[in-house]
Length: 272
Image (cartoon, rainbow, N blue to C red; front, top):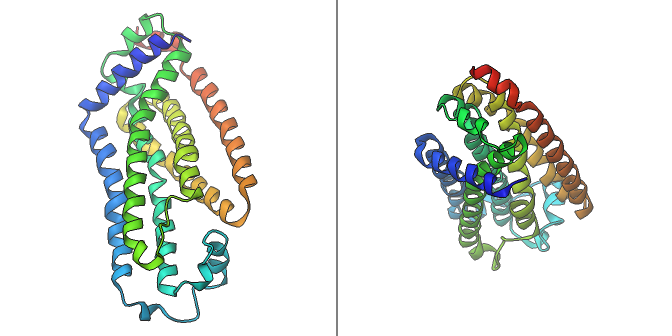
């Protein structure tokens, strides 16, 4: 692969994203909603509530068993504090949706957007290969996602630590779970989301169709995030390693599919 050609196409796509109000609003607005506004609206009222209102028999054997494996002093914490921790992890799952949702927006118009802007002809006439085109589209869609996810995760972690420190006496985040999901699984979810959206964008006739179908792709990936997190709670690091290996295989297979679906000769024929 020629990295100079790949980077040239990547920069062109990034410039197109900066001109799209829809993409910019999604990259800025969705992280702000998921990482800041929703946690404030959900966790802050509980933090300000009277701890005595939460006293009782406990959250239940299932929840206690779930968090006692991750929080060392879980059994000694008040039910009020346990509720805050439970909500903090629940909202963290919401933040982890960003690596899926944002690429679904940016990658929706990767191929079909070129057709609508009448710029696909120039790309197909260039010496760049199908593999390089798909690779450049993946990179250009991932860069906004990585930036938004990392900034959002950092903002969420700081916000949660500020709210929960008075109750815990220590910082809840970052822990192993948050680090591994933000730095490893988050990017991998993004890559899978982008590859799926590129395949959709190649087949549909308009950006609007790509957005609509892409919204359906997001749902099973979100379920996959939840499954991975619960597998960590209930099992061991080995489970995460197995999950990581499976996702790497999925990424490789989807890349092959995306490259095969984007057929240069068929695309040229359709434009003639």
